[in-house]
Length: 214
Image (cartoon, rainbow, N blue to C red; front, side):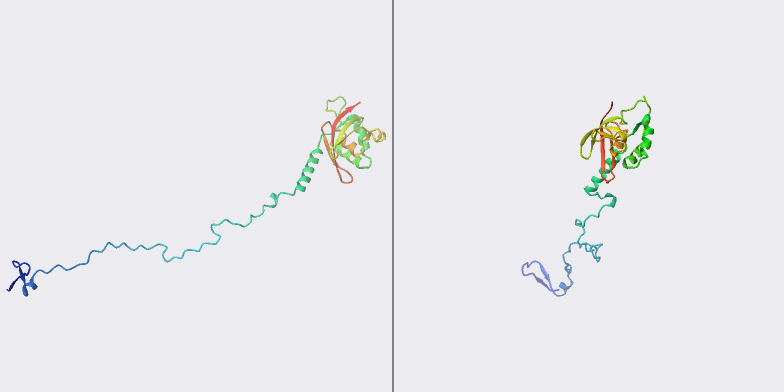
C-alpha cells in the first residue's frame, strides 16, 4: 500500500486510494435538533359562528314603564276632595240621637206632616234612644232647649230655642222642630256634628256648641 505523508504533518501518513476508501467513514451529518413542537390545540368554538349581540342588549331600556292597574291610579285632586267631604258627612251623620220619653209621642205625630223637615225628623226618631225622666244621660237638645250651634259651611254661630211648629218665631229666635235645621239639632249633645242634604241639593253641616234648658 502506498503511503503518503501529510503536507502539514509529515510524520502522520495520509491514506490514499483504497485505504482512504476503506477508512472509517465520518458520521453522517445531521441537522440540529429542532425545538419540541407544541401540539396543535383545537378550539372548541372553532368553526362555530358567534351570535351577533342585539343592538339593545346590555343597554338600559328606554321604553316607558307600563301604566299601573286601574285600582292603583290616583284619582284627581277634585275627586279626592269630594271623597273626603263625603266621608266627613258620613261620619257626621251618625251621632247618637236621644229623645225624652215625654216628647216622643208628640214628635211622632209631628213627623206625620209633609215637608223635608218632617221626613228628616221621622228618620231621626227611627234610630233615637228614648230617655226616661230621671235617667242619667248627657244633656241633649229637646223641645224647649236653647241651642248654640255652628253652621260648618259658613262658620256662623247662632243661638235658637227649639219649639213645636205652632210656637216658632224667627224674629224671636224660636226655631221649629219641623224645620230641617230644627230636626237635625234634635237629640244632639255638645260636640256632635250632623250633616244632611237640603232640598235644593246643597249639603248642610251643623255642630252643637252649647245646650241649656231653662
